[in-house]
Image 1 (cartoon, helix red, strand yellow):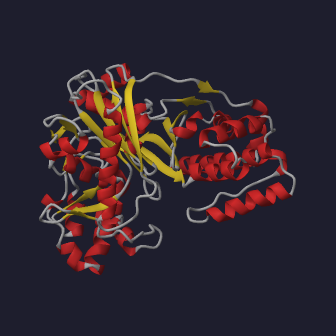
Image 2: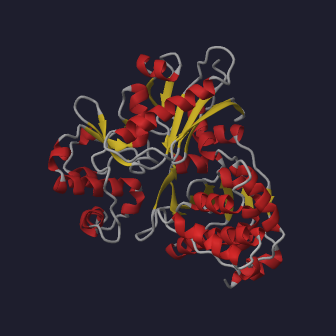
Image 3: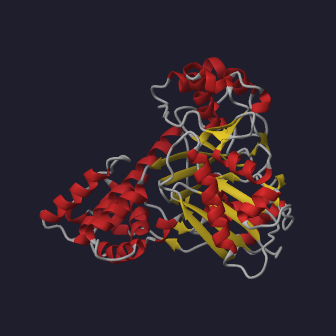
Length: 461
């Protein structure tokens, strides 16, 4: 069956695999849970690779007959500092390290004027953070640093498992087709340690016999370089022009505002398409906060989706302002505080709809804060397209449109899957360019217009 491509999105909560036809329609899907994967020197990598296998095999089960897609593409969440030793074994030497860009001397050095002069290090996206990790590792764990044969991202590791090639793409790497000399010199690693950079539709290699057996697929299928999951989502919903903004409403609620040229520090972002850089930041753990409130209010209702559907109907009947109730967003690891806040609201007599409206308003205001920061850094988003599971939560999207004071188009739910499917479609020979693939495989979605009264109510909050 060569009239499909296999697209796999490795996310923080799910690894999702889908077979897509030339029109971008989903033929079969499978998924595996990833939120419980531990952060560990070796186990993190083996568990993600196992989730990848499980998701693909689940998708295979939805097809009739033996599966041989025209090409395979992967989009992947951000996880950097992934290394191979000289035996080809993967390890994460900085598994227990989280560097803060405001306080880490290594990250400050990696982005410093002394290194970059009048260039914008923000042009190189996550590669700057990866450079900081390698500087930290070289100083704090020199034996681990000396053990590095290859260095890259989780994306690169999974491509390696499929093909045996150490390959990345500009959106997962440094935003261009070669590693900046500044990064190579600063880290002290061999230029050969860094992955070869190909365009997302470039062929990284062919599926090996071992990988084919693991995935339940025949060997020899072309594997494209793929993309970072954020860039793939922008591609999947057609938000790649200057002024476009993709809102990924997934594990975290992420704003990626396409600006064209990179903006200077303190802006953060990465390339989402050739010559098109996006300002990027997120509301961390937003979907989990919605789930916590829904579970606290309707624990007797089976199914997360049904809880949100019922509460969304109740919240939509509540006016902007949630009858005066406000809930604060929490940082990951402090979920108990939100549960206590919900209990306090219930004791105070607030209805379920008002409590749910309060959390969706809090998250929507968090997204507006992102937008204002992006605008303060020089980005000028004009068109908003939403993707991700919570894009189907219409109660939230209506509130978000009012809080932003702008229409929101609801794009493909699995924008990352569709975006990397487009790359696979080009690599598999269906289309000549990503623009052609986009024109054939994506469609505009419904547009949610902001409610005028709600816009006025939220304007001064």
